Image (tube, rainbow, N blue to C red; front, side):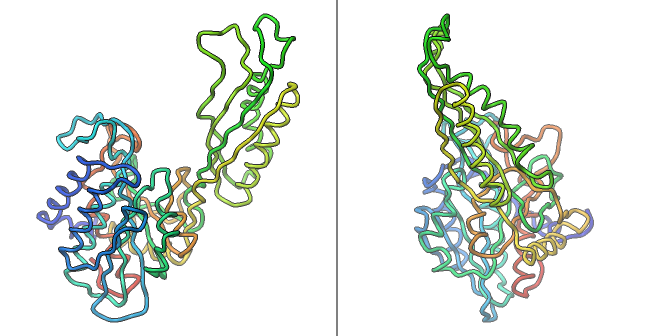
Length: 399
């Protein structure tokens, strides 16, 4: 890699080693959604020691640090990191592996928190910019919508932002490679449940009852037709089944009276999202009617699509290029299928979200797996990116 700000930061080995220690400490003590008490204490103490103004309590365990530049200015930006862990039993065998049985940092939020703390330290040492930076440490990204909760409790009312930025590590991407795009980057993440009901009956006499397993089977097979026949080829959507429950394992000769099918729906636009919800209900009802039974469909909208604003995305690409070199930045990647509750913040404030490669070694593991660990070599890249975002937004010097 050519000379970049990430390399400059990496050369400060004492700084990187200290951040690595912080990251591994957070990893060793994982806390799940809205329970990030120790983590938020660590973050608040770290920021306070830097002389940064600290506010706590939004979203129960959220922490916001406010740093004003040397020069007064009206522009205010937010930099966001998530803090929560997952209910997964760690299997890395590393010295800093989780000390909490059944809980681990399997998505790299320990690294996200550490990179933003590192940027806060560098910026606090020399706040050579015009305006204000809010460092937003968010709880409960993993499924419980901590970003939405912080907004509902007054995040942007109390800490107004003209733009907001987020980062996620990217396993299986080369270390330091940055990908993003204007417009929809990450999908809406919704869940649905179809319940098929009939009379059930004896397996030897199906004609004497109504079999909901037939309706459920046709429904599952028909899911692909929703995508192929109701979503334009130029759009993207995904429907997947994740849970099926019916009958009793010990009674294979009994036709169950109820079948429950649950799954996920991913989409990138409000129109496609509406189509998926409508067609799932219609398909379930049609399959049930054809089998003489009934069906009900529950569609739960969880995280909206993550939509990057064009202006802020262009700035993010510029900041990333300064951090890792333009040859390592892709500003027009394909939409990604994961969901992220940073999307709630982007619905309120224009901004951009990027993914920075965590390394593509043959033994690299993907997020949400027991073997995953954040790559500490990524820390300088993240710190450099954050500093360059501030420089591009508020006129400071690049890292």
